[in-house]
Amino acid sequence: MATIETLNGPLDTAELGTVLMHEHIFNITAEIQIAHPGFNGWDPEVEIPKANEELRALKVAGVDTIVELSPIGLGRSLDLIRPACEGTGLNVVLATGLYTYDVLPRPWHFSGPGTLLDGDEPLDELMRADLRDGIEGSGIKPGILKCAIDAAGLTEHVERVVRSVLRIHKETGAPICIHTNPTEERGLDALRILEEEGVDTGRVMLAHCGDSTDLDYLDKLAQSDALLGFDRFGLNILLPFDDRVATVAAMCERGYAEKMILSQDANCFSDWFPPGLNEQVTPDWHFQHVIDDVVPALLERGVTQDQVDLMLRDNPRTFFER
Ligand SMILES: [Zn+2]
Image (cartoon, rainbow, N blue to C red):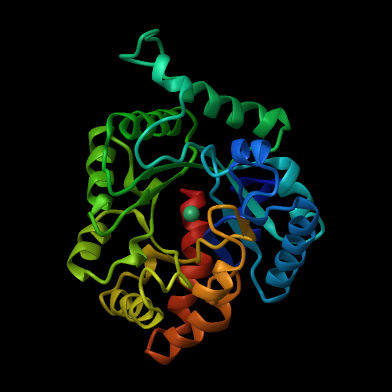
């Protein structure tokens, strides 16, 4: 029996069920919230119960597991996640790592290889501690490592994070999610560094491939064993719904259903945007969009129920069992 670490402890992978592989619960910028409480409408007393309701509804809609991909840089906090998930019946896989597109937080400017104080990469020990003692020392362990390669590419600091994540993967065997920017074909940069470090691409999920309609680019990524994230359904401001659906259908036609997952990269609350903006600009960007709208649209375009089951059930399970 293979198990995966979740908010409620180790889970038999056979129990993963229907999985949304890339979501967030809260994305909170802690330092701004401390200095300016309530910035962009954040009120935990309102938002935690609201999140709990949304997550309960998601379970009722047929989703069993979400992978919550918010490490340092995205505001992960058990004080928020725990009450939001309590009693929902959802399995929640948490992440460790660091999310930046360009530079590291200030402490890393002074410690770590090649810096003033030199020494080992400080991020290594933080991830190691999460995986060993649990997040915030709670015993609740992350099930996945997370880093990002965005438009700026492998800047000095981004490269430090990525190599740190790959090092800890090799030490612990934890699988990896790499946020990529498809416009700049950062998925190919990810594959290059994985090869350099001798990491099996089958242990890696490349996030945000679904922001692209470039089948040549996606084809190149699909030549690896990586899991490709079509994981921003509802973010139609970046790419319209029909284009997202058509690209998944085209990839299924090319025989890649075994390499894809469907998700939304949604959240219950984020202080990145002014209050109310999501409702106005991205009304479909919510947890139930894949189940309510994307799956029916895929079936209509000739994607089979078996292929949908691969993307929502079998591929996530296989990924975590490898
Ligand atoms: Zn995300």
